[in-house]
Image 1 (cartoon, rainbow, N blue to C red):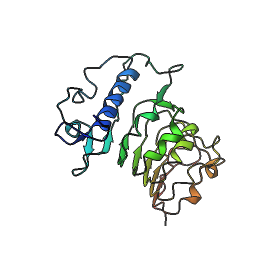
Image 2: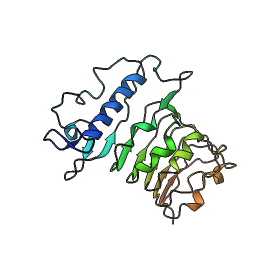
Image 3: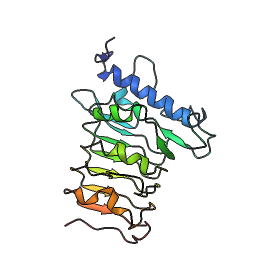
Image 4: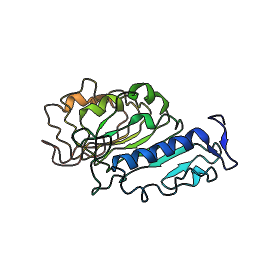
Length: 225
């Protein structure tokens, strides 16, 4: 079957169905193989079900393409060390997402991610040209994520609260995100010394910025005039 054909008669694109099953395997993997019977249980490779009816996602009604993925809190805090970790750090595999060319909203919050795989990060990011909303809050990500995020130029909302972003190890920050309207950087160890490195002054469309609970920033930023 061609990767662009509909799966069966239900309207789910085959390449995206395969991609979703890869995502499920990834989350089972970062749980060390445990809780497999609790993770994305409706995502089954039975050759019959329409992936647009699976939990935690939404599809475009006409094209049958995935437009929203809610993959938050899929890492169980009681699970053993993940199979893809290095020194206990859970790595987010960015190569999982290129099949979803019309993805507009992606929630990966509360999964303990402490880094990203770089093997396909920069080549694959160009496929997420429709992504508007990205939630990476409540993970353990540091400045290394910023170079990847800076390629997601269609973003309007970016949630990075409660991570380990400092701003000390970035050259461009988020300067390319010209359409960004909402940015949440609360709960990170950002200091006034390095705030300029994040390139916030280049974000001309920014309407809401939250820098609360950072070193040197004690209250939420209000709407940007």
